[in-house]
Image (cartoon, rainbow, N blue to C red; front, side, top):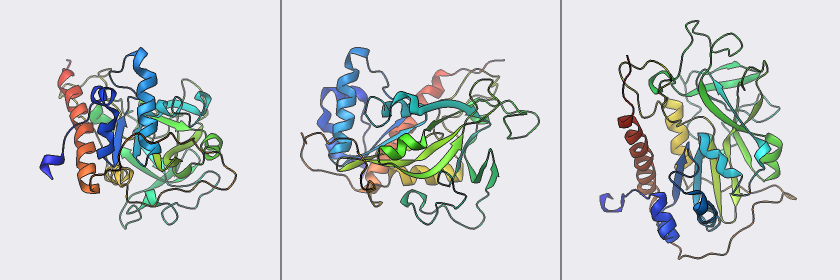
Length: 294
Protein backbone atom coordinates (compact mmCIF):
# COMPACT_ATOMS: atom_id res chain seq x y z
CA UNK A 1 0.00 0.00 0.00
CA UNK A 2 2.77 2.48 0.91
CA UNK A 3 4.17 2.68 -2.61
CA UNK A 4 0.70 3.69 -3.90
CA UNK A 5 0.16 6.51 -1.39
CA UNK A 6 1.17 9.87 -2.83
CA UNK A 7 -0.20 13.42 -2.85
CA UNK A 8 -1.65 14.72 -6.10
CA UNK A 9 -1.25 18.48 -6.31
CA UNK A 10 -3.35 20.76 -8.51
CA UNK A 11 -0.17 21.67 -10.39
CA UNK A 12 0.40 17.99 -11.20
CA UNK A 13 -3.15 17.69 -12.50
CA UNK A 14 -2.77 20.71 -14.75
CA UNK A 15 0.49 19.29 -16.09
CA UNK A 16 -1.11 15.89 -16.77
CA UNK A 17 -4.82 15.34 -16.01
CA UNK A 18 -4.30 11.60 -16.46
CA UNK A 19 -2.74 11.40 -12.98
CA UNK A 20 -6.33 11.29 -11.71
CA UNK A 21 -7.00 8.09 -13.65
CA UNK A 22 -5.25 6.12 -10.91
CA UNK A 23 -7.44 7.23 -7.97
CA UNK A 24 -11.03 6.46 -7.11
CA UNK A 25 -11.57 9.64 -5.06
CA UNK A 26 -10.19 13.16 -5.18
CA UNK A 27 -10.95 15.75 -2.49
CA UNK A 28 -10.97 19.53 -2.57
CA UNK A 29 -11.29 20.80 1.00
CA UNK A 30 -12.48 24.40 1.41
CA UNK A 31 -10.69 25.78 -1.67
CA UNK A 32 -12.12 25.00 -5.13
CA UNK A 33 -8.91 25.87 -7.00
CA UNK A 34 -5.90 25.92 -4.64
CA UNK A 35 -3.00 27.77 -6.20
CA UNK A 36 -4.60 27.86 -9.65
CA UNK A 37 -4.00 31.03 -11.68
CA UNK A 38 -7.07 32.70 -13.16
CA UNK A 39 -5.93 31.91 -16.68
CA UNK A 40 -5.72 28.21 -15.82
CA UNK A 41 -9.17 27.91 -14.22
CA UNK A 42 -10.93 26.63 -17.37
CA UNK A 43 -8.38 23.81 -17.76
CA UNK A 44 -8.61 23.03 -14.05
CA UNK A 45 -12.37 22.62 -14.03
CA UNK A 46 -12.30 20.71 -17.31
CA UNK A 47 -9.88 18.22 -15.70
CA UNK A 48 -12.12 17.80 -12.64
CA UNK A 49 -15.27 17.36 -14.69
CA UNK A 50 -13.59 14.86 -16.99
CA UNK A 51 -12.39 12.91 -13.97
CA UNK A 52 -15.88 12.68 -12.50
CA UNK A 53 -17.52 12.00 -15.87
CA UNK A 54 -15.21 9.06 -16.48
CA UNK A 55 -16.18 7.34 -13.25
CA UNK A 56 -14.29 9.27 -10.59
CA UNK A 57 -15.56 10.31 -7.17
CA UNK A 58 -14.99 14.07 -6.79
CA UNK A 59 -15.48 15.25 -3.19
CA UNK A 60 -16.03 18.94 -2.40
CA UNK A 61 -16.16 20.27 1.14
CA UNK A 62 -16.84 23.69 2.64
CA UNK A 63 -15.75 26.58 0.39
CA UNK A 64 -14.83 24.15 -2.39
CA UNK A 65 -18.57 23.88 -3.11
CA UNK A 66 -17.94 26.98 -5.23
CA UNK A 67 -16.65 24.53 -7.85
CA UNK A 68 -20.24 23.35 -8.42
CA UNK A 69 -20.82 26.48 -10.50
CA UNK A 70 -18.00 26.22 -13.09
CA UNK A 71 -18.55 22.45 -13.15
CA UNK A 72 -22.06 23.16 -14.42
CA UNK A 73 -23.96 21.48 -11.59
CA UNK A 74 -25.85 24.48 -10.14
CA UNK A 75 -26.00 28.24 -10.82
CA UNK A 76 -24.15 30.64 -8.52
CA UNK A 77 -27.40 31.85 -6.95
CA UNK A 78 -28.01 28.30 -5.64
CA UNK A 79 -25.09 28.59 -3.17
CA UNK A 80 -25.41 30.34 0.18
CA UNK A 81 -22.44 30.91 2.48
CA UNK A 82 -22.87 31.74 6.12
CA UNK A 83 -21.90 30.76 9.63
CA UNK A 84 -23.15 28.68 12.54
CA UNK A 85 -21.93 27.97 16.08
CA UNK A 86 -20.07 24.96 14.66
CA UNK A 87 -20.26 22.56 11.76
CA UNK A 88 -23.38 20.39 11.86
CA UNK A 89 -25.70 18.33 9.72
CA UNK A 90 -29.34 17.37 10.01
CA UNK A 91 -29.66 13.90 8.52
CA UNK A 92 -33.02 14.62 6.94
CA UNK A 93 -34.38 15.46 3.50
CA UNK A 94 -36.06 18.76 2.59
CA UNK A 95 -39.57 18.99 4.01
CA UNK A 96 -39.24 15.88 6.16
CA UNK A 97 -38.27 14.99 9.73
CA UNK A 98 -37.67 11.36 8.78
CA UNK A 99 -33.96 10.53 9.12
CA UNK A 100 -32.00 9.50 6.05
CA UNK A 101 -30.15 6.74 7.92
CA UNK A 102 -32.04 3.98 6.15
CA UNK A 103 -32.43 5.27 2.60
CA UNK A 104 -29.17 7.00 1.67
CA UNK A 105 -25.82 5.23 1.11
CA UNK A 106 -23.93 8.27 2.43
CA UNK A 107 -25.44 7.77 5.89
CA UNK A 108 -23.99 4.28 6.24
CA UNK A 109 -22.70 3.60 9.76
CA UNK A 110 -24.15 6.76 11.29
CA UNK A 111 -27.22 5.28 12.97
CA UNK A 112 -25.51 3.82 16.04
CA UNK A 113 -26.48 3.74 19.71
CA UNK A 114 -24.99 6.57 21.75
CA UNK A 115 -24.50 9.00 18.88
CA UNK A 116 -25.74 12.32 20.26
CA UNK A 117 -28.16 14.32 18.16
CA UNK A 118 -30.61 17.14 18.73
CA UNK A 119 -32.82 19.66 16.98
CA UNK A 120 -32.82 23.36 16.18
CA UNK A 121 -33.15 25.92 13.39
CA UNK A 122 -36.22 24.01 12.27
CA UNK A 123 -34.31 20.78 11.71
CA UNK A 124 -34.15 17.46 13.56
CA UNK A 125 -31.55 14.66 13.76
CA UNK A 126 -28.78 17.24 14.03
CA UNK A 127 -25.19 16.22 14.73
CA UNK A 128 -21.99 18.22 15.01
CA UNK A 129 -19.42 17.54 12.30
CA UNK A 130 -16.51 19.66 13.49
CA UNK A 131 -15.49 21.58 16.61
CA UNK A 132 -14.92 25.29 15.93
CA UNK A 133 -12.76 26.14 18.97
CA UNK A 134 -9.62 24.29 17.94
CA UNK A 135 -9.79 25.94 14.51
CA UNK A 136 -9.87 29.42 16.00
CA UNK A 137 -13.55 30.20 15.54
CA UNK A 138 -15.33 32.06 18.33
CA UNK A 139 -17.54 30.12 20.74
CA UNK A 140 -20.10 32.25 22.58
CA UNK A 141 -19.86 32.43 26.36
CA UNK A 142 -23.57 31.63 26.60
CA UNK A 143 -22.77 28.10 25.40
CA UNK A 144 -25.85 28.28 23.19
CA UNK A 145 -25.93 26.96 19.68
CA UNK A 146 -28.73 29.36 18.71
CA UNK A 147 -27.29 31.94 16.31
CA UNK A 148 -30.18 34.27 17.11
CA UNK A 149 -28.74 34.89 20.59
CA UNK A 150 -25.11 33.75 20.34
CA UNK A 151 -22.18 34.82 18.18
CA UNK A 152 -21.64 32.38 15.35
CA UNK A 153 -18.46 32.28 13.26
CA UNK A 154 -17.99 28.70 12.05
CA UNK A 155 -18.40 28.64 8.25
CA UNK A 156 -20.95 26.50 6.45
CA UNK A 157 -22.18 26.36 2.85
CA UNK A 158 -25.54 25.17 1.56
CA UNK A 159 -27.01 24.46 -1.85
CA UNK A 160 -30.59 25.24 -2.81
CA UNK A 161 -32.59 22.02 -2.53
CA UNK A 162 -34.51 22.84 -5.72
CA UNK A 163 -31.33 23.43 -7.73
CA UNK A 164 -29.66 20.34 -6.29
CA UNK A 165 -32.58 18.09 -7.13
CA UNK A 166 -32.91 19.65 -10.59
CA UNK A 167 -29.33 18.55 -11.23
CA UNK A 168 -30.29 15.02 -10.19
CA UNK A 169 -28.73 15.23 -6.75
CA UNK A 170 -29.76 13.17 -3.74
CA UNK A 171 -29.88 14.58 -0.21
CA UNK A 172 -28.30 12.84 2.78
CA UNK A 173 -28.25 15.87 5.06
CA UNK A 174 -29.21 19.53 5.45
CA UNK A 175 -28.05 22.45 7.53
CA UNK A 176 -28.87 26.09 8.19
CA UNK A 177 -26.66 29.16 7.88
CA UNK A 178 -26.66 32.61 9.42
CA UNK A 179 -25.99 35.22 6.73
CA UNK A 180 -24.72 38.56 8.01
CA UNK A 181 -27.14 40.30 10.34
CA UNK A 182 -30.24 38.65 8.89
CA UNK A 183 -32.56 37.18 11.51
CA UNK A 184 -33.59 34.13 9.54
CA UNK A 185 -31.37 31.10 8.90
CA UNK A 186 -31.94 29.65 5.42
CA UNK A 187 -31.86 25.87 5.13
CA UNK A 188 -30.30 23.95 2.26
CA UNK A 189 -28.50 20.80 1.16
CA UNK A 190 -25.15 20.30 2.87
CA UNK A 191 -24.48 16.59 2.35
CA UNK A 192 -25.27 14.62 -0.77
CA UNK A 193 -24.17 13.53 -4.20
CA UNK A 194 -25.00 14.18 -7.82
CA UNK A 195 -24.33 11.93 -10.81
CA UNK A 196 -21.89 13.23 -13.41
CA UNK A 197 -21.52 10.96 -16.40
CA UNK A 198 -20.26 7.59 -15.10
CA UNK A 199 -19.12 9.09 -11.80
CA UNK A 200 -20.32 11.52 -9.19
CA UNK A 201 -19.68 14.65 -7.17
CA UNK A 202 -20.18 14.47 -3.41
CA UNK A 203 -20.48 17.46 -1.12
CA UNK A 204 -20.25 18.34 2.57
CA UNK A 205 -20.95 21.97 3.38
CA UNK A 206 -19.36 22.07 6.83
CA UNK A 207 -16.57 19.57 7.48
CA UNK A 208 -12.97 20.72 6.84
CA UNK A 209 -12.80 24.52 6.96
CA UNK A 210 -9.41 26.19 7.12
CA UNK A 211 -8.37 27.54 10.55
CA UNK A 212 -8.68 31.25 11.32
CA UNK A 213 -6.43 33.69 13.16
CA UNK A 214 -9.22 36.20 13.74
CA UNK A 215 -9.51 35.36 17.46
CA UNK A 216 -7.04 34.79 20.26
CA UNK A 217 -5.37 31.39 19.90
CA UNK A 218 -2.59 31.42 22.47
CA UNK A 219 -2.15 27.66 22.33
CA UNK A 220 -2.13 27.40 18.55
CA UNK A 221 -4.60 25.99 16.06
CA UNK A 222 -5.61 22.54 14.88
CA UNK A 223 -5.46 21.46 11.26
CA UNK A 224 -8.98 20.03 11.51
CA UNK A 225 -11.59 19.47 14.21
CA UNK A 226 -13.69 16.53 13.06
CA UNK A 227 -16.15 14.95 15.48
CA UNK A 228 -16.96 11.24 15.40
CA UNK A 229 -19.83 12.02 13.05
CA UNK A 230 -17.53 14.18 10.94
CA UNK A 231 -15.04 11.32 10.54
CA UNK A 232 -17.85 8.94 9.57
CA UNK A 233 -19.10 11.44 7.00
CA UNK A 234 -15.57 11.78 5.56
CA UNK A 235 -15.20 8.01 5.31
CA UNK A 236 -18.52 7.77 3.46
CA UNK A 237 -17.59 10.59 1.11
CA UNK A 238 -14.44 8.69 0.17
CA UNK A 239 -16.13 5.32 -0.14
CA UNK A 240 -16.39 4.95 -3.87
CA UNK A 241 -17.80 1.45 -3.42
CA UNK A 242 -21.12 2.85 -2.23
CA UNK A 243 -23.96 2.50 -4.70
CA UNK A 244 -23.85 5.17 -7.41
CA UNK A 245 -26.78 7.60 -7.42
CA UNK A 246 -29.32 7.35 -10.21
CA UNK A 247 -30.99 10.56 -11.34
CA UNK A 248 -34.82 10.52 -11.25
CA UNK A 249 -36.58 10.21 -14.60
CA UNK A 250 -36.87 13.49 -16.45
CA UNK A 251 -33.96 15.14 -14.66
CA UNK A 252 -31.24 16.72 -16.77
CA UNK A 253 -27.90 15.72 -15.28
CA UNK A 254 -24.45 17.16 -15.94
CA UNK A 255 -23.31 16.18 -19.42
CA UNK A 256 -20.59 13.56 -19.79
CA UNK A 257 -17.26 14.53 -21.30
CA UNK A 258 -15.62 12.02 -23.68
CA UNK A 259 -13.09 9.82 -21.94
CA UNK A 260 -9.46 10.75 -22.39
CA UNK A 261 -7.70 8.20 -20.17
CA UNK A 262 -7.50 4.49 -19.49
CA UNK A 263 -9.68 2.74 -16.93
CA UNK A 264 -7.69 2.39 -13.74
CA UNK A 265 -8.43 2.64 -10.03
CA UNK A 266 -6.76 2.11 -6.72
CA UNK A 267 -8.39 -0.06 -4.07
CA UNK A 268 -10.75 1.94 -1.84
CA UNK A 269 -8.51 1.78 1.23
CA UNK A 270 -5.55 3.10 -0.75
CA UNK A 271 -7.60 5.90 -2.28
CA UNK A 272 -8.94 6.88 1.13
CA UNK A 273 -5.44 7.06 2.56
CA UNK A 274 -4.16 9.07 -0.40
CA UNK A 275 -6.91 11.64 -0.24
CA UNK A 276 -7.08 11.85 3.55
CA UNK A 277 -3.32 12.37 3.76
CA UNK A 278 -3.46 15.00 1.02
CA UNK A 279 -6.16 16.90 2.90
CA UNK A 280 -4.34 16.66 6.22
CA UNK A 281 -1.01 17.66 4.66
CA UNK A 282 -2.66 20.77 3.28
CA UNK A 283 -4.13 21.73 6.64
CA UNK A 284 -0.95 20.79 8.42
CA UNK A 285 0.98 23.24 6.26
CA UNK A 286 -1.65 25.90 6.91
CA UNK A 287 -1.33 25.23 10.62
CA UNK A 288 2.43 25.71 10.59
CA UNK A 289 1.96 29.07 8.93
CA UNK A 290 -0.42 30.23 11.67
CA UNK A 291 1.42 31.75 14.64
CA UNK A 292 -0.11 32.19 18.11
CA UNK A 293 -0.98 35.71 19.16
CA UNK A 294 -1.12 37.10 22.66
